[in-house]
Image (tube, rainbow, N blue to C red; front, side, top):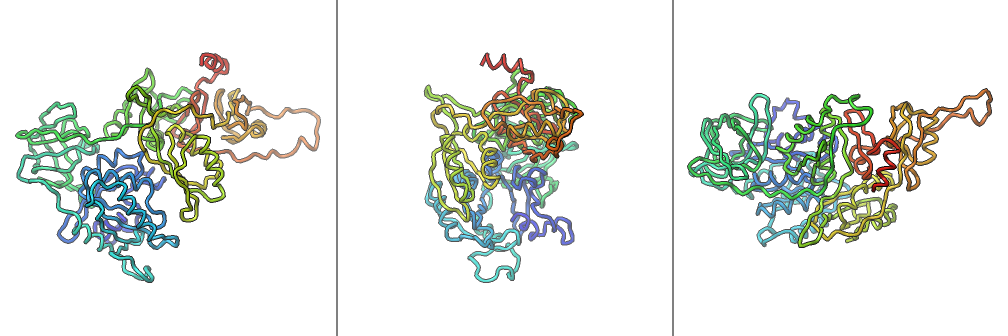
Length: 587
């Protein structure tokens, strides 16, 4: 949808390469690979005599920090809902945040060309969602448009007939934006004021402080005051001012109230800081960011293979990179624990995207099992709870019911959705750990899972162990087919022949609950006797290849995940068998 808004507003030349691209705003490699928006981005288009700023935000609750700080720069919201899927958990999350800010909402029912479209049911579900979330009656009055985003088509009323023959135009959306949303409020004649909502870095210009001007105007060379969250004031001088033109930035001499700008020249910039005229230094309330719910420890790689893949290895380098991340990743928290760092985030996806980014930058490191963050209130320990929505083929209904019962999840609703069975559960966040990998195995990967944070409830009883034991390498070397054939007789294996392994490395999951040690480097014993049965070809089952996110879900408290630019290895925290036994006795 955003692609065609940019194209039809003539942001690109007709012969430009960008005219043939898709997912233009999702420029990050991880966003394209996962098919989701991770980072909020700005753009601007001109329609008739109006400048329309577009902010593309993530929908997933794990990236809620991006949503929360970005919505403060907007006056209105275009809520896209799939005509077949209807409102999803992420739809509820973003809509809730927008309504809390009293934003005007415009609903677009997208993908109305789908064969399984359910227009009436989708509209009913949207109305119910607004009834649940709206805080006043005025928010229940919202315009609805219909669209086929991938074709750049939109209508004020549901079209009838063959839509493929209809002209490709998003003019109804542009016109409805102009008639629905008001021009930005604020007095351009009052002293300048703006809150920093995002940061960007440039090797030549330095730090860009990005935000929307809420009062007055700003000029190049102007002296201002920067007020930090702790109330400290610093004198600054504006060097350059940029506004958005299409996907890029355009340098201007001045900007006025309502415009989204990027400012350079500040000695220090931080999200939530207020920039204002020295004549009226007033701090704007900090953007409220929900607290993290999951934490992991991260430290330098300590495996025997350290330094083989990456070139950024030291704890100091990891710390410097994480401190840089904290400047812009507002949902992230970090506390030093000796030679390791405790990282807290909004969920598994939030943390795994950061780890994958570090990996691609050349870092080698190891991380622990994710753990939920509890809090104390009125003498009680509370833990985070989530609403979990699972869509799965009907044949796996029993699998879902059995697995979720083990995790003591509360079934709130179940019904047939499109062609799948949909289950809606409420469950503690800790019960979600490892569930994705388990369901992937049980359903052969044919499920989708979405979750949204609900709040805190009293800490429940310990959960039963849901993962089996693992196969542990007891001798370093290179794996071979004979040794792996013995290993796969015990359970599933994670590696193939010819791979380097080390003592204490986890190379498979046992079919039973206990951990067992195995020599996958062991070769077949050679004799001068031959038999028909001993000369057969070894048939190995293809290894289970885990993504970083699945592997992070799989490990237990006594295990670590070794992450390098080329490999993801599971290992025991203590590689030596004797040391593992001693630590197990200590508890």
